[in-house]
Length: 235
Length: 235
DNA sequence: TCAAAAGTGTTGTTGGTACACCCATGG
DNA sequence: CCATGGGTGTACCAACAACACTTTTGA
Image 1 (tube, helix red, strand yellow):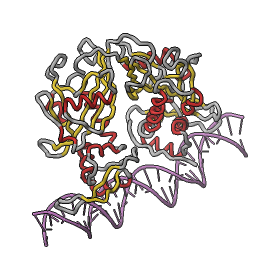
Image 2 (cartoon, protein in one colour; image 1 turned 180 degrees about the vertical axis):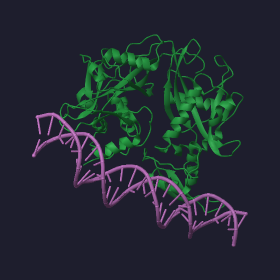
Image 3 (cartoon, helix red, strand yellow; image 1 turned 90 degrees about the vertical axis):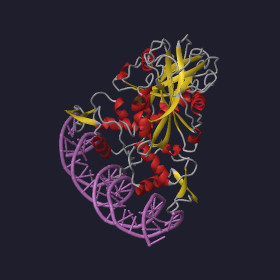
Image 4 (cartoon, protein in one colour; image 1 turned 60 degrees about the horizontal axis):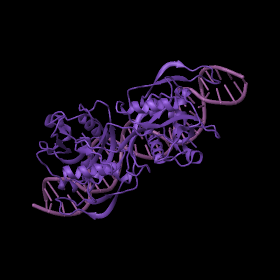
């Protein structure tokens, strides 16, 4: 942050976009993400995270938001900075690129706006390599890091709520946790833990039209962040 | 990460360096950090985080390491990326600067190499504003963020160990936690929690020359990261 | 009246807190 | 033999896992 120097360093902003959709085979809800096919060298034809160069008049988040809308059609509310990757050799091209990576969590209702295309495809996060092959640049490493962080963060911060619309029954929230953590949770104990935390509040309304007892609807409580959730398995 | 563009964006790497030293008044161990006095506009004369422009042939961490050695004389082992700050208006100068911030934790034995100077001074982290006034750029915000993250992270990851040399008695580790969290902890329960976690292992050796029962020496266990520590107060 | 999911009750166990107490050393 | 911090024992209590059980709807 001192003297200027004539850099040949390019700055890019890319985003790992997570949405929850049913798995094509099992039908279980899992994490999906969109990838963009490279249409030039290096890594021509391979899949990469959506992103683009940082424009001089754009904030970092704005840049992420703009490319996201552009490439995926999405405008997710939850957008959070993850990490900056800047090793000298991370791109084989002559120019050096430092990438600032964001992650986005797409709400079920926001996901409706998602588009596909020849050069934009969605993949289940956990079988990227089988489906998409090796990602361009170090994007495989970045994705692994993002998944790791998401799974860790979900246990101490209410980010899971970011996948849900305004109002939701607790079972929906449980399904989000199950999808992220990839394991079943005990419904009754889950309910008690979530309510004890105070990260959701009862709206007083109920969902109707279900083939069973109508569940209460909750909204997420903007206060109360950070806690510990001792999430437990069910056999 | 796609098309090049002729940016006017500068990239800088700065570091929040934390070391533990006794407080000038209370004598209690607290967090200190070094600041550099600005010797040019903008913010001439004000204090700023040590840092410098990213050189094209340098990795991000290398850059942090190099400026650190240069300005503070320190070569801390623990260096970790914190966040990238890049708002358009964060510098009043004509050039736009994106700063990637690292934090460093300085071990007690490493701290011996620290230097001071007319333009480099160390301050207790918690009374920066009284001692150093308003920091240059958004460095005040950055510092607050770093302190926050450090205090949160210490409860779920063994970073506190980074302040200690190879071998240490548990009371030393407790003092580190107390200094970071700014409150007293119960010695016996602290011991049990730490041992239960398995983040330290007994070296079999003991410290000698104390005016009391010689404490066992421990070393930190490189496996076992992430856990939850329910740190409790003592009245 | 049955299936299915919502939601409650209850019990055994684990792990944290508080605090009394013993241990080992240097002076 | 005393002061000082190292280290152990233990009793109380809160929180969690497991799972049986009741409730409320649509078909």
